[in-house]
Length: 287
Image 1 (cartoon, one colour):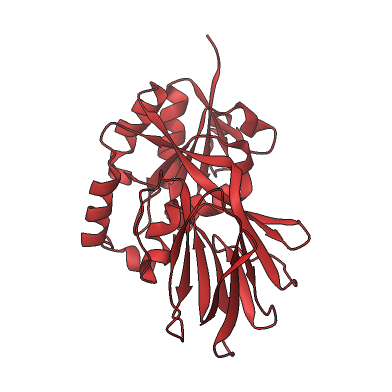
Image 2: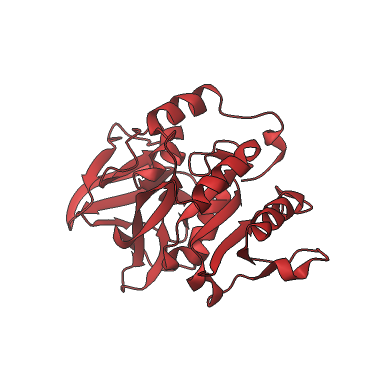
């Protein structure tokens, strides 16, 4: 029988004593599945797992990520290049990406082990500096935002080297389709189906009447010029080291792959999360 491997990445601020992770490790081990963990458990049964690293991740069928959507974004920044399917178990607040609730874990892990799922491919955005150096990859968004002690900032936006807008604003969001329900939504931007092939340019609190956001084709290339002394850049909340005065954003050749089950429906999830955005106790936690 072919050996099977599953990787687990846990937000230990959510699963504080790794007790939930231990349940999953023991459950999978009893089913004859080898587990790779991002960090070791304080567990006497140390034969139950090995460490997840650049070599062992190549063997895994899929990754179980325990936390919130923020945990998944952080994990993607580290292991996204391997393009392994992701099963997210939600310990966070919103759970658009980690859409399996923690009280359902056995049911859905069993389905994943049995192969009773489909893969939901999500578009990613590559971000470069003006010299072509890759700064990072975004699933949700790339955000330019003025530094705290400065007033309004200027952002000149180009689409395919043609000037589109010259925003005086607090910032600009370049969101992929998955990120339409993140900061973009909070800033009044449109919600789109996450499987659409597009991205969104949305100014944050513009100070002029020129406040138009736009949905652009995924084949388009967006360039934004800004003053790096008064502007911070965030790629899925990760801040790259950048001193240049422009970034370039375009569709990535890579994709993120999420495990979905028969009962997954984006529109139902959207309605549910908007009506019930925060679960009891979640205000004290981080994603």
